[in-house]
Length: 212
Image (cartoon, rainbow, N blue to C red; front, side):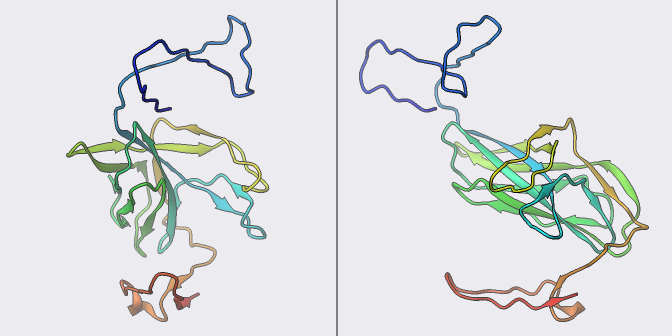
């Protein structure tokens, strides 16, 4: 909450719980911090899977890659203290055969997707990986290591009920080298279409060829 006093005086602050009340109970701990505005940000990374019959059904998903497969990693930027700049997210400590293109979340935006892709010959692996967000704050580059948000339950309709999550101590990435993806969809009409740039105008239509 940001507040700017328009003149000197005595101000009263009221605290209420999420139910809109103030219960006089010593078991409830209310904490209030008042400080000058300090622009900052935090990065969260998490995965999810949609049900085959309904894309509104969301369930937990591990960060596991199969050869030639791509896994979307959902990125959330929590902005604080009036920070409104661009945040570029990259992956570090990736094993051989796994790559990730940087994801830039524009000014004022809070969501993005980082794509992790395993090569055809990616070796089996299981180990920690770092997702890092970088942004300019007051003219200086600042980096924040993302925390992984692990879904603790599924939801039948994500538009009505948001799934709950917990923060993991560190993020783990696995490559299942001996498993094949149940299905693969690639952009392009043939294997030589990789890296081709598709462009359109604002409000225009774009036809994207897919290969199954």
